[in-house]
Image 1 (tube, rainbow, N blue to C red):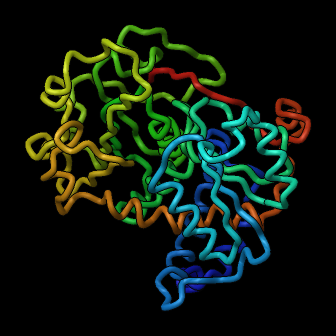
Image 2 (cartoon, rainbow, N blue to C red):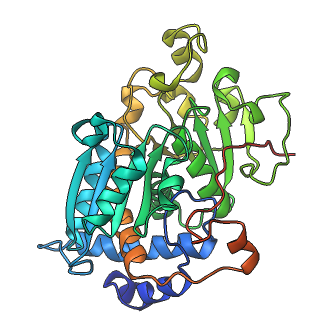
Length: 363
């Protein structure tokens, strides 16, 4: 009965609002288990909305959302725009390449201009890690990080969690293998935070040159308070995939790489491509995921990308419902102050949580 009511957007969403404490969505490092579950349950209701003949509700009518992208995007930008329109919001898209940024306008001045125009929600993607945190300290708008440098991509992490949850149910104890360019992947960092909070066992796998310093074999095991949760590190993909419930391949972030990290793409594909032979080492029916865009034939074989185990296109579809849930909770929720100590460690407005880039290995 509760599930039926949740699908109609009833008590489940009301319950979600009671645990919601976020003013912005900058990463998943400060999300509680209850808040992540609130998004999952709200996304269930939003999926029901999207299944209707007219997939629209007036939940955000009168609100204005602006997407401000300093980097290119297909899935994320389109998904946010569809999500906002499905909730009744007005949507305006700004590409930095076609804005006053080209005339020398600073990021903060651009954001202040957007706020002065009456926007309530800002979705920002930027090439510099930490840019959304800076923005959050200088605006009254709700800020959503759509990807900042190597650092974080929280809504991608949430839609990945949601997709896993739909297929696997409770993620506690599930073995999730993330393979590829971990060092330059903002998706990997957000996924690790979310999966760890949900109780999953996270394994990162890749060549040593594509693992962040803190997780390289023999690297310093930092216990810095801002380090990420512990993960299992494996350089051999065949060993990493043993017993995996989920296999997530990441593309090589060539645009963020320095030279000399790999001998060749052919060598990388030989050792780290997720193909049918390697996938057979995972559990039967293990999910195959990829945040996109894919480089088929490099990090994943075409046969695996289009196999029955692949949920890659489903990830894209689920992104709309998850982002609807995030927008709904931000607009409708009433963030409560956490403890005074937590508030003191943040900005004077309690706008931005600590900015984390560190890693540490499991003991």
